[in-house]
Image (cartoon, rainbow over all chains, first blue to last red; front, side):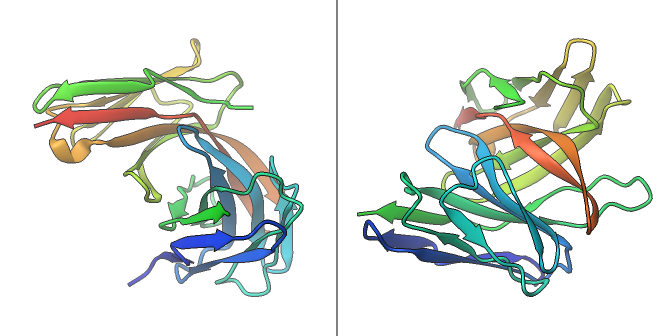
Length: 116
Length: 117
């Protein structure tokens, strides 16, 4: 089955700890994204990567870090510098545009992070 | 800042009725997309409408786009209990980088649709 997976589904963290959220896709997509969703809110872009070994900050990158060493993987680390990390985190991927084609984003099932 | 804003925030209807959700945005777009999210799950793409299109259909979904008013609407006809979900509009900004072109999507806060059996 092709798709995008995230693990774990639920994650609990003590204050002051760093945690890493996994995102893997086998869709052969070039671009990957991390979003944060708070209750009753839309999605806000944290980081995105359009190609291996390259990534860019989104709208709310402070307190987060990412890596893109493989095309299939785009892990997100929530650091202790993130002041309010409790949220639902969604990973997405999409194909690079070519020939004027527009692309949709495919989302993983999400990871719910709770800071204790 | 939020580009797309959905209206209403919540909508409750009976099965079989039509549901209409609206989205307004502020700046020019290339295309507008609608996504659906079941509670606690990821988003699923429903439909994309380009800036030069005015209406698009997909099954029981009908999307309209009025670029002069910077607004879009999503109509779900003959609703079912299984349509219960949050619906988001997303507008785009093109990202041009080493990997070619891709879209940065900006999401609204969504409309929570409840379809009662």
